[in-house]
Length: 192
Length: 296
Image (tube, rainbow over all chains, first blue to last red; front, side, top):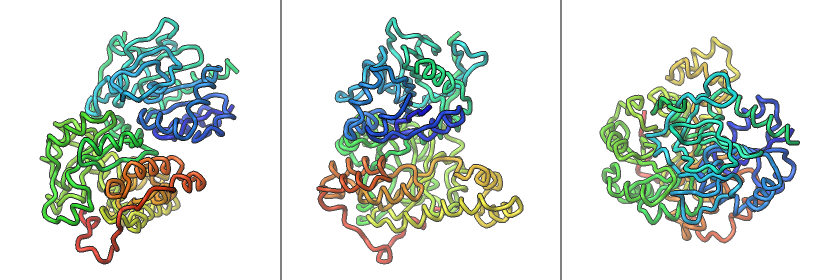
């Protein structure tokens, strides 16, 4: 199974490592032609302004959006969650997300770097806590009725799923715990 | 159920932000307007400073931390991370920058050093630090002092890539050699590099620095960015190279795209067109001050 990692900017190499450990073949995506051959995709953390801008200028955006609409399984972490959201609050005026999952997110909603934190998360279906690393993380302000919330912190969802789209406001690629990547691959396999 | 105990300022959180900046361009800006141009062009972060290195070089005198109003103006102008520079060893400047809630502090040789023996004890801070290095020993000493991101120094403000290449090659070259060393030789490496043994042993095992390695100092064109990325840098800092070029907006965008597509010569050829003049360059042997000699 080929899993693409959008490699325009950000922590794409850490996701690729986790995917290899979970038994998938990662492929770095830098242009539309790479996107055609993947069975699932990860949009990593990084800067959402940079990623959206490069997705546009490198001609990836439209194809990406179409493929997700056609059912391509996607995991978006941090900036990846912002890219997939319906609406961005406190972003740049010209920042248009893909609108693939029915959530509204506030950029840097947990604060700047000094407020970045780690915490144990209780995740639906996991027997033991998962260490969540939140870095200038987006805050989910609203999740639509079709969105399943798999974990939350102080009343705000931090791990969401809608059909084959998963998003986290934290960074599962930074902790040596492959459970979220495995969960995503299960979801993607089940769909293919 | 969803009440979480938050731990801030951990190594994971500090190094984590550096991970998020990978594959990106961090641009020097001197005011809010330049910061907006940088963000528009796709910068992953901006470095707030009073004068770009080529002007510091020209003007001479003591270069210090930027003033708080200027840093705050830049913070409110953009949504991306904002870094700022403190003088080497000047922990009071770093304390002020932490109080201003910048996202990263650069303990930088571009400013005039405040201490000729000691770097800042970076473990004492919640804000993460980036430090420059010209070789692996220097990088590991900075990491042992708590730096969470290393950038090769290069020679800032020259538009000349030769020193950046020397430094990144020195760092990655020694890492490659250490991965080939046997366990007894690692003691000698620690001695030779004047670095803590556990860090040397970690490199021998992983084949990489424990923190991300970016490149700075002399990057003036998309081709320069590609060169250092191909040599092992994970992101680039561009100082005078953007706002001292003929068309900063174009140059900024081109360097951002070149950093993402650093190994794709066709893309690089495309983004290198129509950029106007790059910043004027300087020969290293004609320099009065070698900024990269600062730091110990």
